[in-house]
Length: 468
Image 1: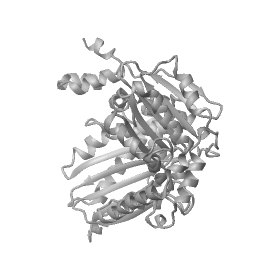
Image 2 (image 1 turned 180 degrees about the vertical axis):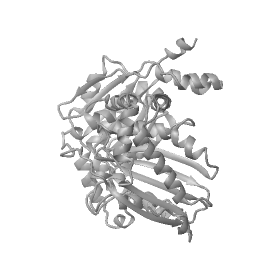
Image 3 (image 1 turned 180 degrees about the horizontal axis):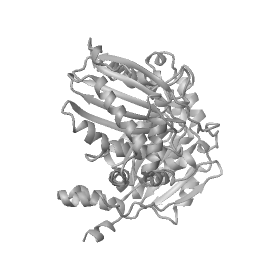
Image 4 (image 1 turned 90 degrees about the vertical axis):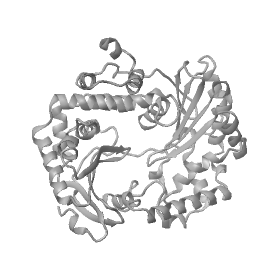
């Protein structure tokens, strides 16, 4: 029975796992043996239009809808100097209607036709994810093509003023809410002036006063073009008609200009050690260790992701067992490798009760990381981490639609590396990490010579902070 269960395709297997009550013995067996289905790769076809639009087709006849993921190399890292936040405003503008399909019509489609249209802007890209009933594929393509063809027209004065007002309220909220502006403070420490990743996606509050509708329109015209975009169509479509439909919708749109970084950084130089204390209106202490690391797709990125899983992916993980569960004063912990197109950071964040000094916690964490660098981990610990990583990776792939689904992952792979399977290949590299490769990654990146130490403490309680 167990053998048959493990032969189920990856995402259906994990769906079954979530719906069952598994005994402690069965759970131990599953966690300590390799899971079948981890080599799953979605089927797809690609096509390139003469204007440079890269299209990926991923058919799933088991669903009753079609999903479009349109992504542009137009994240906040492309914000003009001194005008941070433009990319985010541009992305939000794209949701407000197109030349042929104004805002009122999009609202009607959402409320009456079971249509979903969402936008997301990150440091690297801006993406529109839409879901339509399968019989409305042509309409979905017409709307997306019209949005692309007339992108700059979506930024009207009315739209611009409304979005800026929302962003001002968000900045005000972050200024009032404890620790809400902490991440921006960390970015200011990690990155030098002018670095594309120094500001958050919504930009600096002071820059909002400098922005104009013209700035947003200029950004949209520059970056929202076929040659700077990738489109993935997923779901239940007719494979005999799809090529002609795509060509008919998008082929007459001018190519525009591609935006790619001239070089992707592969060299690593230790950051050194820096620290700061953040006093705020909190009733706990919090330690953040940020280790500058490598970009998405770097040869060490996979090992660092695997190392994060070994440290904290489950109740069996090393940091959780030795620090979180072993100390009743420790509330929770997060560990992850955050990698983007031109850089990355490895984060360890631990929250403790107010009576615990962060210096003690810091020393414990650093001793643990030193032991990893010197002694490595067991193959059993690596295997448990692999299985939890597989659960995290494959579960969202049950969905073909929206952000995080199969279509989105295929599309971003095409955007980053001209390869829809880019993220799947990275995951397989992560699953191939060994105790030896994790030890090397810990020794190279997770050291006192390469860290920003952030102590968050209640107002007036700086004696609880770290003095590295």
